[in-house]
Length: 562
Image 1: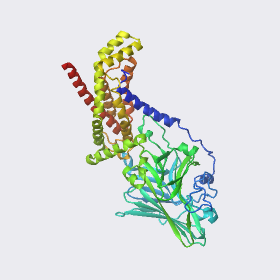
Image 2: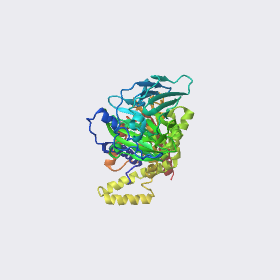
Image 3: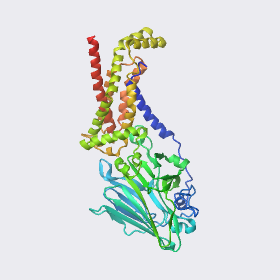
């Protein structure tokens, strides 16, 4: 163990961490493709939950999302697009189903050099889909699908364009469906200024002569990501797929939707499709039990995946009406806002297994930014604070390494004495440690303790949308993107080399070669990583070098004095 240095441990651990992520992405089971040759009607049937039965009582979610497609699902005539514009959202809503077919975020440009091109979060084109659908399903013996509009039914809208007026706090966009037997459904989207929360309210009016019974469902459908995993692209490390909340945050990957569809009763939960920095979520009313379901279907663009929920059975007597209010989130993963919208919704910011460490780190980073106003300097100050917290541990590590360095001449003498006799060399080395009262693991264990904090901060800097397109200074205009001139990665590599010079050199030639390659290897790795992450690593290295140099000088002076 004498030649295994802490830097080698930490560096190799990080490389293995990245390789493990790549293996997870490349070797996860792939969903089995379904038959591609299907009619438009059969494709439509696949993504509609089965209608409830008369046996289902009020409050029940039985038969909520059976795997079998609805037999009564029929594509409606082509609808018209209704455009909605607020200060933070630009949506296209199709009157066919009154579903959201496109969502753009004007306050989140697609790139720093394209400030007027809004990020397109939702879409429906010839290559892929990412849409939000909702509708109603009637009990079959109360008229079946004809008395309830699913997400293929044709609604009517008063206008084709809605824009939030200056000074207005809300914007309502109603859609109306009138069916046989006096059933009228009004589906209203309510938008709020400055908010990514969208209220989706249903009103069911029964002007007929018989009871109406049915339920509301809402789902998100999307194609798999077209971007594969790239070890050198940190952004591709982020999770893309389904998620839901049943008292704890759960992920449901696309392959899981295909192999093992979900059907689960949940209270006070939600469903979502998550991608890097952004999400779309459906949030049912609190208090009642809803069934969450997932499914893989074959669409016109290929394999598609659904996650949704369905309400308990609703009953409306003749001459009466009832309402059901749901909400959506369409936008960035703003943790403070998401936590106020629904329990656990803020967990969609994927901090991984060290979320319990990452959350306080992000909170502290946000507080620092509140005072400074620059995310780059906030990262530097946070790094200094973390270094201060671990000062004693680092001091123990550096003292141990300094003492090991002082033993290098004696260890070299032992190696020359025993040559290739590894057993006798190992015994003599351990006797030397015992005589000099040196713990060969003393420099390693304090560093291992800090690894969870580093990984947690890695995810904070990678996943937090607040750092997306955040400028630092000079040529760094986006801390979430790589350094365009590779200055920070090169400086980081130089600091790693300097750190090695302060550490005792390994006696083993193979370890010497590995240590020599590490700075270059990490420079290549970090050349493609977000500049905010590289800035953290560079700052941490500079502080480590300063601390290690001071401690080493103290020990050398103390040794010279004796």
